[in-house]
Amino acid sequence: MSDEIRAGFCAIVGLPNVGKSTLLNQILGRHLAAVSAKPQTTRDRILGVHNVDLPGETPDRAQIAYVDTPGVQDGKGPLRCYMRDASVSAASDADVVLLLVDGTDRRGRIPDRLNDPDAAALGDATRAHPLILAINKVDRMAKPDLLPVIEAWAKWRHGLEVVPICAQTGENVDALERAIARMLPPGPALFPEEMVTDRSSQFIAQEIIREQLYHQLGKELPYACAVQIETWSEKGTSELTIGAVIVVERDSQKPIVVGRGGARIRELGIAARQAVGAAFGKTVHLTLFVKVLAEWSRGETELRRLGYGGEGEGV
Image 1 (tube, rainbow, N blue to C red):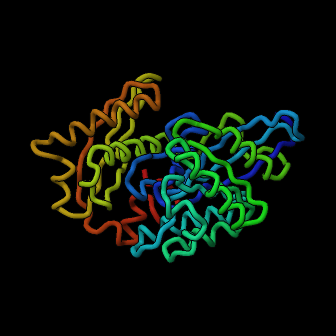
Image 2: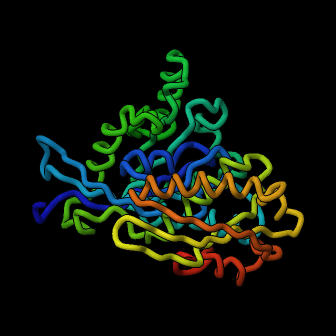
Image 3: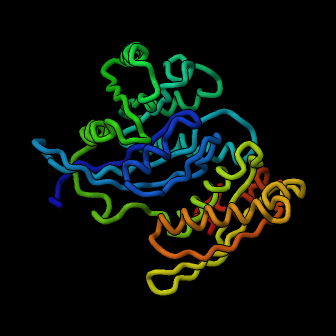
């Protein structure tokens, strides 16, 4: 890599469930951030570093440090405040802000949505730094619907570049990356070329297990569920043994996760073991437990114990 490239931070922001984590995983080509249909699946800022070629341009390389953020929405309680603050802070610290909107959401895909009280913090975040907008899920949009959405955003901010994409399939994501790269300042690389994330393997496994928890329980899943890695042991380069705890807030929630006769947590363990194994390319032995930590999402001390609201990853 030459000494001077384009390099900087790009905060991916948006309302819940617009596909931010799906986009990050697609760009990196690996399973880094948890993805589900449940709002607020992402709870932390997650860094993903990607190097991009810019043929015919000077500099002709870029290093984009993406910061995936929780969906911005209104709400009370320490956990929601922590997630909202994480998003706004990431946008404030970024060189470029990528605002992602869901093209299939008729209300959420238009600029007026940012005027609603629950999106006010998101609107503020978009004013902090240079902005680019991506309309996601265009594969599920009727073609006549796309042009008016692009025009609405172009009128909302003069000179705003609008890129239609499909984060799930990768459609037009390369064009989006080039557009982001051109907005970054020239300078030295911020990270080693081989670096993908600053998150530990334990954190990634924790995210994958939590994702499978969402997939298995769906609407039955209590909002305030968390996963914490308690034991981690590697045997050579091919085997990994993990002990993880699923944390819920109330005694009544524990049977929901465990299931009748332990059936649900066994199914969850199988799915999570397979997903973690695929992500790390190893044989995984996974043991899951469920414990109750009363009202953990409402207490600052408990939030920090589980890795929210303070430094560290909580593993």
